Amino acid sequence: MTPSALIDASGAALTLAEPPRRIVSLVPSITEILFVLGLGPAVVGCTIYCTEPPAGVMTTTRVGGTKTPRLDLIRALRPDLVLANIEENHREHIETLRGWGIAAHVSYPRTVAEGIRLVSELGQVTGATARGAALAEDLERRLAEVTARARARARPTRVFYPIWRHPYMTISRDTYVHDVLAVCGGDNVFSDRDRRYPEVSLDEVAAARPEVILLPDEPYRFREAHVVDFTPYQEMPAVRDRRTHLVDGRLCSWFGPRMAEAFTILPALLHP
Image 1 (cartoon, rainbow, N blue to C red):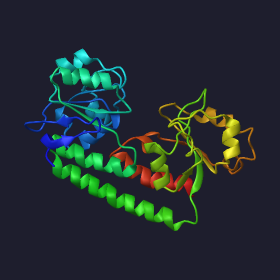
Image 2: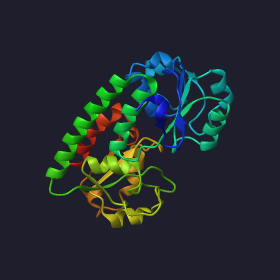
Image 3: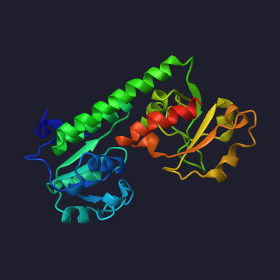
Image 4: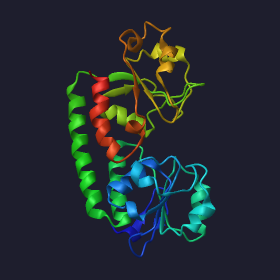
């Protein structure tokens, strides 16, 4: 597959005559991937939420938020390519950019395997094919290892993973985060909910009897003070056994290099 023949997650065909030399990334995890692939000098714009690598993004033009990009500023940067994501960015913004003649690639990984394929695909799109393939191959090897370890255990660990507070919200099976937890040996206690990000009460959490609670620092910034939300529920296994952990939210929601960290850190929290 060549970049000119690629159909992205939005159903649009990406046609590039040559590898892009000026890239704007509207997805924090993709920004990090670009730098890992050696494309840092080509990244001329990124969002205010793009934090990795710190030294790399420090001098990159900030084009606004993922949901609130400054389209006029992106246009002024004269990018050859804009990288976006269906869940992180608004379709109308991407359509506006395309209407101005700016090429865009839209991704939408919802499983770990799809996240790894995205790494390889980004390598193809940007002309860093060999580096993208090498990183994807390494991640596939790590995925096979962590999956084998999870399957060797008697059963997965029941886990509650909130993404918001007031009201509490969590994840269903139709999410990338759910698959990350499953791969690492976790059984998402709200996997059967109809909505992708359902609201839940703490009473419902207690009734689900999670053995581990993981409190991420994004999109909601959970902190130690929020652990007390669960202390009234002493019969909940996670509370009883003191297995409520603050975690780096990027481990469960970022594609690329963070996946390798997730395969190491999360199983240790789920299966100490």
